[in-house]
Length: 298
View 1 (cartoon, rainbow, N blue to C red):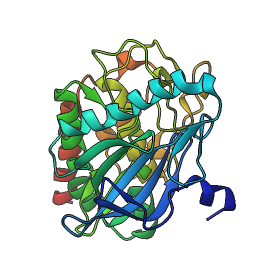
View 2: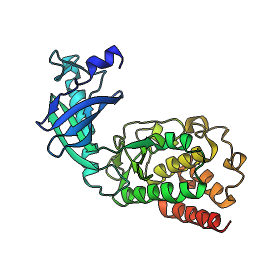
View 3: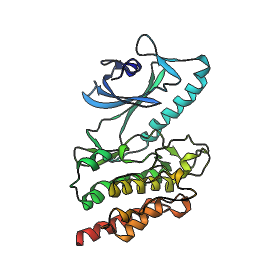
View 4: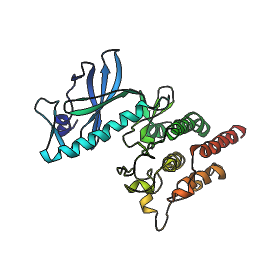
């Protein structure tokens, strides 16, 4: 671990809430730190996500308490922590084997924590690279269809994930997909101004604006981009670079065995114009099922 990160993260063997034993930090971002931990009440591994916006805070000398860098940051920190807990509130509503499972959330050390189930496995991004011999039929039926079913549940509850991509899908030890990281998720019918979260290649154009209309069609762009990545071995051209002149290459230039129907569906949902995309996961799922049927017959 880099020296600056060492002092930013909670030390190993820190115990939170007299229950969660920190084993190690496994990743950091501009807003949070992710730890592998053990739930001492049941001796099970879990994931602890700590709210730690590095530009606003630093760690106190006790190596646990979070301090504001300047007193003027207190309001911004409080607002951001409320947004952080939004992920916990959303996950509490969801119960699906292909969605990360909520366990707990709490305030401690002057900041916030979210505890979720630990999934042993690799990201879909790593899976696609490492499992080159996997059949297209297996990928569509055993991985992509379950992801579509999970996203359909989100949408029925008025939630959009807003950061669907191969690195936010874990393939567990049973080769089952699990969608993780709901830090960007919102109830799209209730939120008027949205924080901007962008992953180049996987985020639709409307995610570049706080006020643009977002909905189920937004996640469909990211799902289409994920399929494009699987078939082409690279992400689509970033949406912001496709507004005036669109340089995106048709998926069939890379994968001639894909059916024209599925290729058309993927390219349609990669449109920078939300009105040209499907309005629900149902249509996408029907076409993927048809592709699986075609592959079974061939």
